[in-house]
Structures are given as structure tokens and as C-alpha cells.
Image (cartoon, rainbow, N blue to C red; front, side):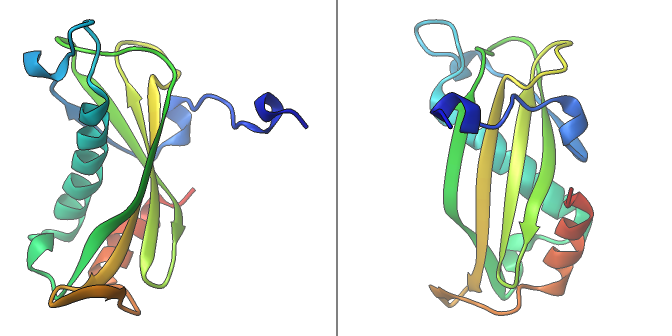
Length: 150
């Protein structure tokens, strides 16, 4: 099997469960007029953590176990940038004992296909000793992530 055959297809809006609109800013674009790579990761972080805030009703930074980012990645399909807003779709691939694996699709305009897709892994650790995962993760986090499973 070739690398092209093994690569998953381009995600569509139907692949995601929860949605958030993120405003783009002038400073988000680079000198070439497209979104800076770091801004994609900021959008992934915003989509995940805003969902957790809204779904739990809590300031998740104040929980005794906090989610740290253990892994991130991005597949780029087409350019996006200022001034149009970005719609971020969110889904979970896995809710484990101490971790959650999210996928975030970024869409701009009417396209049904994602402009980019991120992978974002949270591992839950004790906020006083972030060196090792805690088991299990907080129930409130599990309850917020589980409905996103696909």
C-alpha cells in the first residue's frame, strides 16, 4: 500500500459533533496572506478548552487534575486566513482512563471539506505533580468528552 493510499481522506463537516466559530484577526496572517501555522494550533486549543468550559460549567484550570497537551498535529489541505471567521468542528477519537484524543476540523466559507484538521491529546495529571498521569481523569471531563465520541 502506498503512502497516499494509507493516508485518511479529507474530513468533511459530517465528521464532527460540536462546533465553535472563531474570529480571525489581522495579525493571524503571515507575510504571504495565509494563516500562520501557530494560529492553527491556537484554534485547536481554543476549540477543545472552550468546549470543556461550556460542557462542564467550570473553570477547568481550577480542577485538582488538569489536562496537559501531550501530542498535537495538523494536516493542512488549503489556505485560510483573515478576515473570514473559521468554524471549528470537534470530535473525540478516544476517551481513555487518563487521556482524551480530539480531532478538530477547521472550515472557512461554505466548503464541506476541512481546510485543516488537528489532532490534540490531553493527558490528565495532578496539578501539583504534573510528572505523571492520574487515573482516572475527572468525571466531569469524561462526561464532557464522551458525547463527542464518533
